[in-house]
Image (cartoon, rainbow, N blue to C red; front, side, top):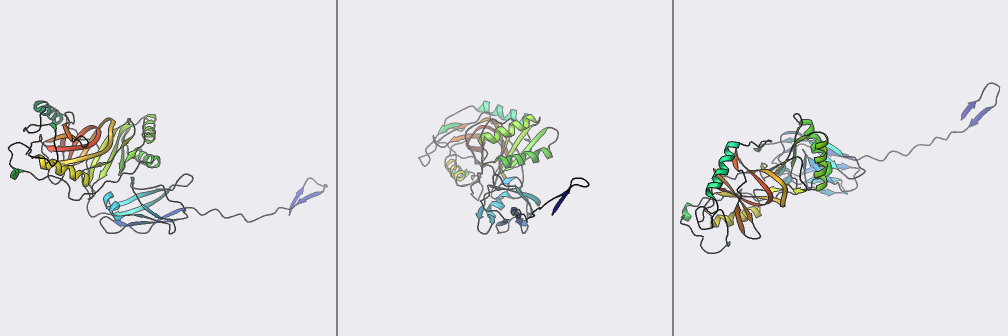
Amino acid sequence: PVELVLHTGSATLTATLVVEEADPPPPQPEIHIDHSYKQGQPENLVIRLENVAEAPESLSIGGALLPFSWDAEAGILTVAVERMQYLNLDPGSHAVTLVIGPGHPVLTATLVVEVIELPQLPPDEDPADPDHKDEDKDKDKENGGGQPGGSDEHSGSYRPGGGGGGGSVSREKTTAIRTPAAPVDSPSIPLSHTAAQAAYTAAKAQAMGRNLALRLKGVGEVSAEVVESLSRQATAEGYSGHLLLDTLTASGAVGVRLYLPFPLAGAFNAGGRVEGAAVEKVAQTFGRWFNNPLQVMRLEQKGSFGQRVRVAALMGSGALSEPWIYRYDEAANTYRLLQDADAYISGSYVYLTVEQGGCFILSDGPLVRK
């Protein structure tokens, strides 16, 4: 009962308040990782989800997007061991971020990783040597162009599987093609707004001054909307810097790293390969016709990046001593020397500058026909 006394001598007003038990709040989504992960063990990564009915939108570990399988009935999300080995996380604790979709909270957890061996990484900053790059440009100018069949050929066309290649170099002196042994395909996962924003926030937390190094792994397509959002935010907050976009090899090393400076020009594909069936096929084709130690790098971008992009490519089993860069047009079956690639070697990586994607031949010196 509820009683209300107006004032002394007045009637007392009464009413009844009905109290009902409220409905319990809906169960909230939860994420559980039951064990640590050791790099190299033959085991999938299993993540249990509770109160999640629909397929999650994306999963990232340590800032890298990963493909996964989803068992809705069991609430189990599984990442194949091959993808975990490909990611090759550093030892320690890594943030796991799961985006379910609009209207749902972003779920986070911690994955403890033990690693048996760390891959070699290229530096975050491009270790450019201006003097060395000037020497490379001078060499390009001195050698000029040429036609197939000579010792200084830099452009031309040829028929794979066709007759003799010309030249006087003995086949016994041919150096083996330097290609990685295990052909695998690189993942190509579109970059979502959520993953991009998470990487941007992490980069701000680690920034020195107003210079950002925004790191992402295993990214494929980057839409114009994501590019515009990142560029606009960096400009509004007074940041400069660049994206570091890594594609890893099967062994977990950084195979290809793209350095894209802010502001970004537009949509692009960040995928790159130095191994895999398509790369190996091109390497074998050039190996039949040319005497040089060489390797192949493929950038998944179709056409122009809209800006000059610095690239680091991991060298294969044998190092190149004098990198010459050719772009191979697979459709036309022709190749040409990139005069302005500014190529040089630092550590285990060849650094070069490109304006468009496609297939690139990294040769030790000018191509020499067999």
